[in-house]
Amino acid sequence: MKNPFRSEAEAFRFVLGTAVYFAAIAIAAAAGGFWWGLAVFVVVSVLVGVWFFRREARERPPATAPRHRGGDDERRILVIANETVAGVALRSQIRTATEGYRSHVLVVCPALNSPLKHWASDEDGARAVAQERLGRSLRELEELGIDARGEVGDPDPLQAIEDALRTFGADEIIISTHPEGRSNWLERGVVSGARERFAVPITHVVVDLEVEAATVGESVR
Amino acid sequence: MSAHAEAHDLGHEHHGPPAANVSSGVDARVLGMFLFIASEVMLFGSFFTAYFFVRVVNNPPEWPPEGFHLPVFVAGVNTAILVTSSFTMHWALTSIKRGSRTGLRAGLVLTFLMGFTFLATQVIEYARIGFAPRDNAFTTIFFSLTGLHGAHVFVGLTLLLVATIRAFRGHYSPEHHHGVEIPGIYWHFVDVMWIVVYTTVYII
Image 1 (spheres, rainbow over the protein chains, first blue to last red):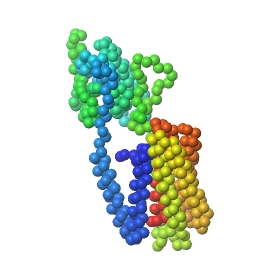
Image 2 (cartoon, rainbow over the protein chains, first blue to last red):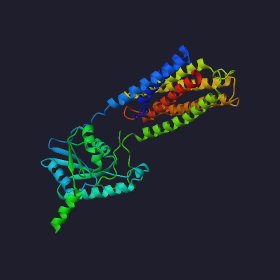
Image 3 (spheres, rainbow over the protein chains, first blue to last red):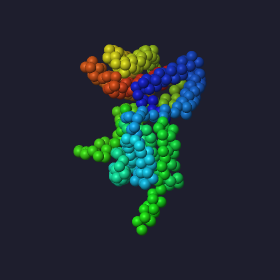
Image 4 (cartoon, chains in turn purple, brown):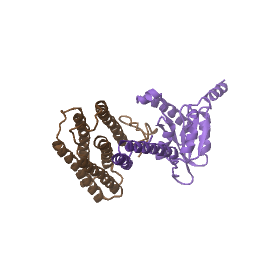
């Protein structure tokens, strides 16, 4: 539900709406008595309710479309990943996306947390874990010669993207997840949600850490 | 503006305590005001519950009870003054957004004067109303509900006074006017609550 007191302008509109609503009821009650007042109250309340829910359903926030920053040969890639941030498939995709450009890569790791800890604002552990994964991933990207920096972001991946776009902008977003069935983000529709919310090309990379670990194990043997 | 939820920017040495993790959904000051208003709604809700409890339990043939008369007309004029003050408050904020300091100052002064008129009228009406809070349950809840709102108007006037003084000292700009926005939200909330109080207590 939208907060009617989010800004002064919205609060002012709420005052006007409230004044009209109560004035209609009071005038009806004064002119026709209690039952007229009650009837107007019911009718106006239903109308307000219908209008409110229709508007909520109709209103879709405009897609965020960051403008391109830098020259034509520059490319800014925003990577959103958490447990899969150090995955081989992801690194490979980043390399492909940055080839032939002066690239800037921002890797954002949402600090995933349990709902209980989230509501208790106990985020330190989640942020520390995300930071550790991020550090490992950045070191590996550096070894590949990719100029990347990283941040720990909002626990909500879509919000983390929104945040990053405000300061970094991006020509492409890469979202890395576990495979279908093991990915909480896919279950929550993070990739499809991002495609609706952001007017930026979005690449979805599936990182199967189990397969990658097995491959590494075989090559070591 | 939404702040970036940034904990660390790798590659930069950071000294001192870690940067605060800022939620990016709503500005912290606006969120604070929203939570404050939510708690106020609950406070007023408890008073309205008491009012309707008294009214329903007594179930008198007429309301207000026989022998008690409320100054409906004067309160109606007061309502008009308070609703008008919301317009001037909105004008003040719209003005500073457009870069007009004159409009900001005029809007704030007018809003303050109307709020003060409302409060002064209410105090005068209290003195002339002819009953006291201790008389019975109706008078107690009447003074409690309208007095609670009056206290909020007083707080709103204090915020407006600070905003007005700052406006005359050259504060605020089209980019930075949170010091007007926040009292504005509060003032509109006070206005909404009065519309509910007036309709409930004086009209219905």
